[in-house]
Image (cartoon, rainbow, N blue to C red; front, side, top):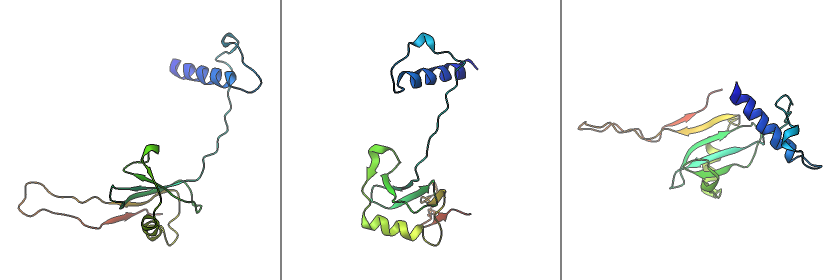
Amino acid sequence: MKYIRRIATTVTLLAVLVAPGGTVAADTVSSAQELHVTAKVLPMRHIIVDPTGQIIEITSNTSEDVTPQVFESSDRPNNQRPLSDDIYRSYQRYTSAGNSKPGILFQRIQAITAAKTSSPLTVFGAIKLAKD
């Protein structure tokens, strides 16, 4: 409980100090004050590709038609890549026929090779489409 109170006090203090119209001394802010935050989550669609440009995963937080952002290996900002024509064509193939909804829209199943056998078991080209 003390951690929640400390976080609430810190957020309240920061919100008051950066509020337009001036600053307030820290000793005038109490943990009993309430802070109401209104936020809007922007619609997004992320395409995660491997180093060769093959789509690994497509995720979305909307059913709207938004321009996807491309990332290599993970969706960290420093991994962002341009949306090439090839990636966009693949993206359209995986998201066609009403498959535009929040969640995982496409996820490539990685090749699996069994170890310690004379004939390795490998899965090629398998895909997993999200269910409704």
